[in-house]
Length: 135
Image 1 (cartoon, helix red, strand yellow):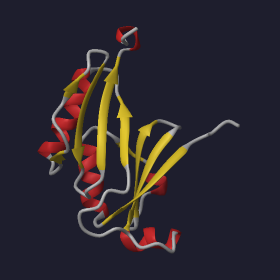
Image 2 (cartoon, one colour; image 1 turned 90 degrees about the horizontal axis):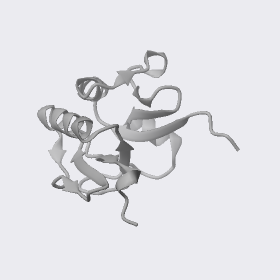
Image 3 (tube, rainbow, N blue to C red; image 1 turned 135 degrees about the vertical axis):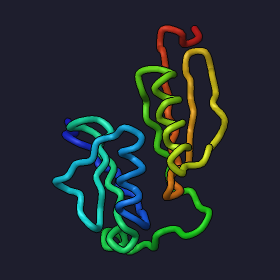
Image 4 (tube, one colour; image 1 turned 60 degrees about the horizontal axis):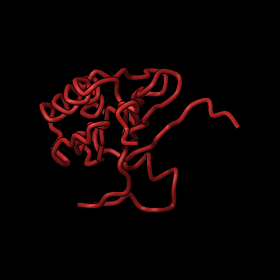
């Protein structure tokens, strides 16, 4: 089996604020599937996308309710090319309304930093160097 693309669907309250947030972090928006009910953020061109759907629209895809309040349904991890890129994305997120999830961690072979986005979704941003993995 060969997967062509991955779409992660997450509920949000405000399309325009979400679009502005992810653009400020340096990510592209796919205008073909973005409208007043959804914004598609491209994480990896032609492979990984996040569909941020208004809560009302999100609920049309499932009979289960959207979690309300302080809940965690999923933590999304993305891997970047360097520690500097990790910190650049996390710092941009924090400057644009996100909150620190946990302090940055350096494991020698892997560096991780994280944030809760403006919609409360958790993002772990990592860089790893397999050549430094403990033997």
